[in-house]
Image: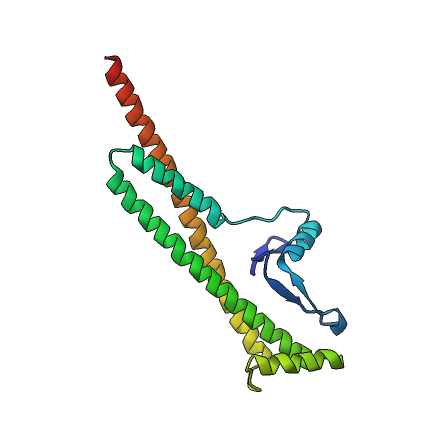
Length: 198
């Protein structure tokens, strides 16, 4: 989560994965603590803020652009140079996608650990028993502190934000690359048409 200070209010930028679960913590009433799916959380936040959420380019849309580039490379005379650029972009996308996945998994694990620590102090006996079971299953130690987990989560969320920015930058470069190839292809076709007319 990024917090941006504006004139008279704060603005929050939150990265939410539709398929992940998030633990919602209520300081005043521990009974209201719960897990919520990312998709549901996105809907609730969109409804409250009356704004549509921003979606980063999906891997599928990037793969479609790569297929489009492959076709253009086949039709182009200078395909070796284009092929090298495309291969670099594909490699960068794959590396960042793996980093995003890994960081999101780490955040999910730390969130689960934080939930376990919170529930260990819950007044609800069943919740405490379940938390103790999860505590043992996750091989957690008594030395783990909630503040430390929160610090680690914030650090990972900043990493995630940076990786998403890199991902979006590569998506922009891919768009630009498609436009350049289209422009070059159009120029070559026009040249051939003019040569045939002469």
